[in-house]
Image (tube, rainbow, N blue to C red):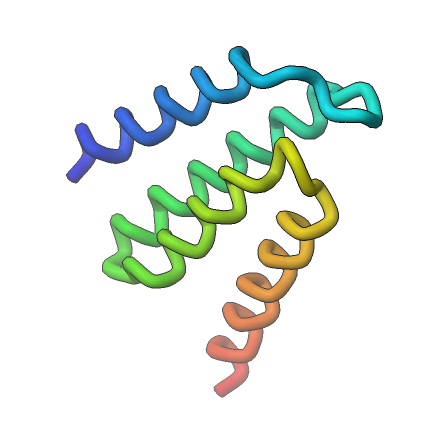
Length: 87
C-alpha cells in the first residue's frame, strides 16, 4: 500500500513538471496545492477511506487546469470531516 502511495505521489510530481504553466502563470502555490492533495489522498487511503482518497486524487489531477474546482473539492472534503467530528 505504501509503495503504491509513493508511486502515485511520484507520478503526480512528474505531472507537475511536465504540464505547461496555467494561464494565470502557474506559481509554486499551485504545485503545493497538488502535492497537498496527493498527500491527503494517501492519508485517506492509509486510514481506510478509499472513496475520499479517490476524490482527492481526482482533485489533484484537475488542479493544474482548474484551480477553483480543486479548491471547491478540498473544501467539501474538509466540511465533511468537520461534520463527522461534531456528530
